[in-house]
Image 1 (cartoon, rainbow, N blue to C red):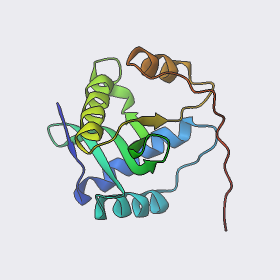
Image 2 (cartoon, rainbow, N blue to C red):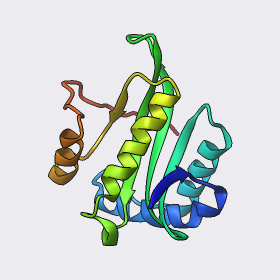
Image 3 (spheres, one colour):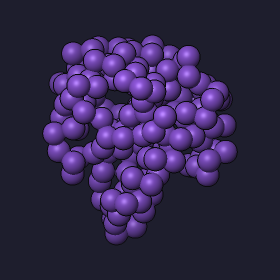
Length: 148
């Protein structure tokens, strides 16, 4: 298995992975049309972000999405890590670590000085996974405003 940038041909499989992810998260529910639109928009502009996939032969078994912005605090580019998911049949075999390492390297190569991510408060497995790989909890609390 190896991580590589996603292609438009991967979108149907990515939507399947996002279905798994959004079905387990409290705040979200799957919508393949919206997910496909979002994936296409990210793929169309490398300044917006990068979607990495982990494949076993032609099957996408994992994905992670990096979105780029600028931190005025750091005075540099930073990344938001979103939509990290490994297909349930491939968990516990090192795929998540491989994909996360590829995301960290990709962010660093693109000049990012920090990666920020959100995970459900109740997802103790994800929190343990990220903390074991160097991420630390933030004292900041996320807020959202949904616009029409």
